[in-house]
Length: 175
Length: 175
Image (cartoon, rainbow over all chains, first blue to last red):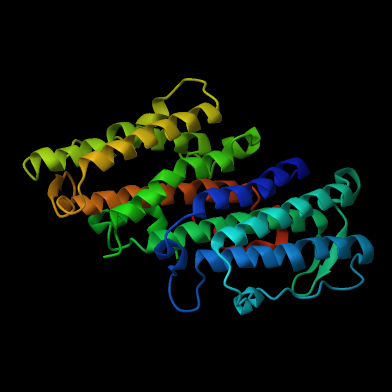
C-alpha cells in the first residue's frame, strides 16, 4: 500500500491550482477542442470535477462513516455536468473548483482520522465492499485521470500539425 | 492545420508554471516514483525538458533559418539528462526550466515571423524534410507528452490502492 492521507491531500490540494495555471487565459481553440463526438472539452472536465466535489467524494465518505456497508452509495451521475447551461468563463469554473476543493479538504481533515477510519468499509452499488482508503485513493487518481484527459485532448488538436514527429510523441499514442 | 504561433506560445509559456504548481513541495514518494526500471520519475522529466530548451528546439529552428535542408539537424540525445548528477531540488530544477523557457519564448518571438517562416523546411536525420511549423507544433505536443507522463507515473503509484475502482480510472489504462 502506498496510500497515505498526507500525501493524498498533497495532490488533492494541487489539482485546482495546476489546472488554473494551465487553462486560465487560453484561447477558445484550446478550451473548446474535443477528441470527437461525445467526448469532453477542458471546460466540461472542470464542470465534472466540480460535480464530484459536490455530490461524490464527501457524501460517500460520510456514508461509510455513518452507514458502513448497510446502505449502498447512491450512484453518481458522471454526465450530469453536461446539463450545465450557464455561460460561465473557464476562469469562473476554475475558481469554483478551487473554492469547493479547499472547503472539502478542510472538511476531510476534520472528518477522517487516519489512525481510526482508513479500513472502514462501505458498499458500492457495482463493486460491493470498498474501503475508505480506496475511496480516498480513487479521489486522487480521478484528479490525475482528468488532468491527463485535458492535456491529451489538447495534444490531439495538433496531431497532424506535428507531421512526422507524430510517432515520437507518446501522448498521441493514447486514446 | 490547427497550428498558430500565438496559440502555440500560449501552451509553451504555461508548461513551466503548471508543473511548478503541480510538483513544488510534493513528498519524495510522489517525486521519486517510476513506472519501472528504465522509466523516468518527475524530477528526471523536468531535467529532460531543460535539456530540450538548451539543445533541441531553438538550435533546430536556427538551423532551418540558416541552412534550410542543406544540413541535417544534429541528433538530440534524449537520455543525456540522466547523466545529471547534481543534487538539486525539484524547485531548483523547475526554476531553471521556467527561466530558460521564458528566454527561449522571447528569442522565438524575435527570430520567427509567422508570416514569413512557417513553411521553411529543414532536414531531420530520421524523417528527412520537415517544416518549421511542424517543429513548433512538436515543441508544444512534446510539453503535453511529458505533462501526461508525470501525471501517469504518479497515478501508477496508487494502482492497487484504488481497489476495484481501477477499471473506472482512465489514466491507469494507458502505459
